[in-house]
Length: 341
Image (tube, rainbow, N blue to C red; front, side):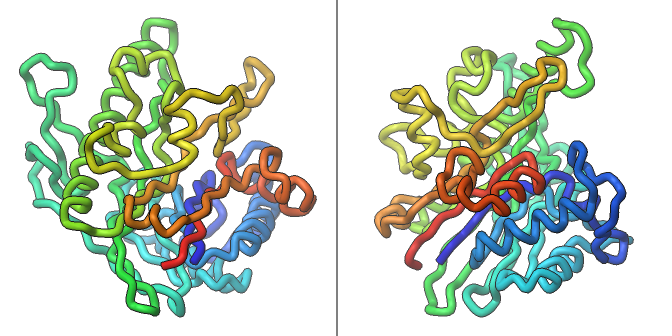
């Protein structure tokens, strides 16, 4: 079985309100890429992945007048994908949903959120992800109220053969100081955003611990907008959000080999899943942001991870059409997990 996570930059811009694809020459949300070209590139990438399930990060928007599930299923039908059925959890107001696109002949999936509902005041512990969590973020004896702008997608999944496991799709808060001007404003915004991102990861870790304690086979996957050693502000907090979710030594841990390589910091060449253009510096910035973390019982099945990076993965580089499609489709690259479930 192949599972994937893929952040598709501004996927929602490629569909009209009825869910029809906009395969035209108008600009997409991608830099210098038309909607038609991005859709064609995505068709090539999704076809090459041939995954049984893809956790789509930045999936098409869903609200009263717009149906992201219909958009994804129409996209899958157009390109003849096996992963042709879509499921979403809690919709958000960022135009960037989290959805699972999956093959109904191979697995069944249902939205199965955990935790207690909360009001606006929030609750301690690990409440439901569409609520609010109370936590003292800066050790000032005053509790802050934290919310997810993109609540994680919690799924109960079962294979056609009867194997059951849990999946949590994640799009953690960006730490980028968007809109801040001036050195001090940028620093304040960056620190505030990192504090909120870490709080979200603490919240997620508490949910992870509950599943591991219950013996649930668990896969946590998506875009964490973070990783060990990613920026200088990490020193203020001691660890990254990814390290929090994976778990400390001596505790029940999740495993992702790319995260483990970076945490060990024993290599000079680091893996990357995203590539961003820095216009003021006229260069590309690469970062490891996307992960597929598994519980130890699933790790024991000897799964194989792969980052579909067009310049780091030899097979992707040699396949010229796929290489160009990966560059045009998104600023992130897919990560896959092949596992015998």
